[in-house]
Image 1 (cartoon, rainbow, N blue to C red):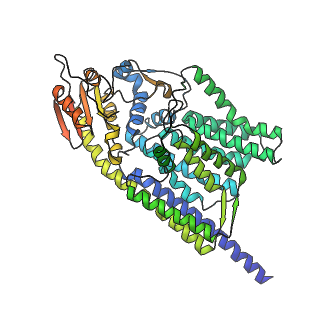
Image 2: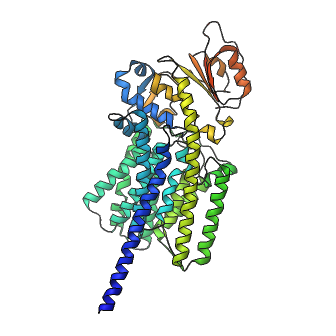
Amino acid sequence: MTRGGQGMTRSRSAAERGSDGYWWALAVVTIILCTPVLAVRYPPLVDYPNHLARAWILFHYSDTPLFQQNYRFHAVPVPNLAVDIIIPLLLRGFGVFSAGKIFLLMTIVLFVAGCHELGTSVRGKPTWLALPCCFAVYCSELLWGFLNFTFAFALFLICLACWLRWRPHWTTRRLLALVFMVGCTYIAHLMPYAFSCIAIGVMTLWYVAKREMTLRHAALALIPIVPPALVFAFYMQHGGEVGSVRWDTLKGKIAGALSLILTYDRRVDLLTVAGFLVIALAIILNRKSVRVFAPLFAASLCFFLLFLILPYGMLTGGGADTRFVLPAVLLLVLSLEIHLPPRTAVALLAGGLALSTLRIASIASAWRQMDKKTFAALALLSTVPDGARVYPAICLDCENKVQRGLHHAVLYATVFRHAFVPTLLGMDSQQVLLFRKQGIYRGLGAEGWMHSVGNFDFVWEYVIPSSADEQLQRCCPIVQRDGDFALRQVRKEGKLGVPAASVTGH
């Protein structure tokens, strides 16, 4: 009896130590993921300045006549509002840059919580596989500054975890709670709501096919995704656009498949890919057994298939196919239960976390370099008169990966100087804030782009072809230049009279 009791005590103690180790590891991973955001003042995500500027305008719209002159509200349930709702609320108590970083940290913490909760819902207990999944928050979508998508994706993971946990026994309270959470996902961004519909739909079909769910129970399980679908139908009738369909190239598909790996440094990318291939091979060779949570695995396969067959552009958005890689990979990993020799399991997990940490360190290093350049850009933009109209002479195809992080740095002039910058907003159907006047801006290289410069007071120049720079010199003398950035003043006397050139640009 005594020996048996001691054995049970040792077993419980080992289980408790393992649980404690998991929570400590999850905390360390969370700190690692937050470090790049905390290490810089201006996170150099491509669209980040646009988001901050738009939130700033929304917060100060009622007390800033310049904003009222340039922008108007379009009050429809646009499924792209995470930043537009949360950052203006944060601005009540924080400065704009602090509010932006708090939003990013919230996204990271929610993403970690989503990975943990989904893994726990699948296994009934925490799974160590959730730890490497957390690093996927620094996917290409985040580096491009698609903040609404990334925030909504974290909500999607939590919604899916709750659905799996509550599926065996629905109550009115649980259904209402999940309707609210899926509704929040829709308001944050359309794509993760679509992910919720696909994952919940596929898993419901699987349970019905296996006779583990009655049709009545299946109807209850689908209720959470219905109200947002009705709201989306209303939105499409009041401002929503289908947009054009654009197909990706083979090179684009390959880059999309690596969207969870790519950083600013190709050497790090190659090392990460090679490292994870070695880990995958070691798992295959050393596995004792592999169990699959079939419903989630089926949803993962569906996401992989959609990535392969869907176009690059649809519903006015770009990179639509690439965004299916994130749920495909995470749901695949979290659907697995891999049994390995203990020492092998620890070594492979440590190797995967080390590779992921190296990738985050590489991103943080690039961010620190760009942070210094952002400071230089702000120094130039601070000389712009209040309310000035600034033409952004920018060329995405001319920039390398590091330079691309500051592609929209000119939008900080909207925050500091109430400046009007025509690249603030995308498609009208993607936000509730719209321009009052359209058609005054033609991007660099477009037909007649030099003539549209005359509609502005200043030109913001950043990494453009020499031919375009030469044309700007004829009409827009430089006020200041610092590295890749230049601020030019537009001469108003006479006509520009400069023919448009062929420039690879916007």
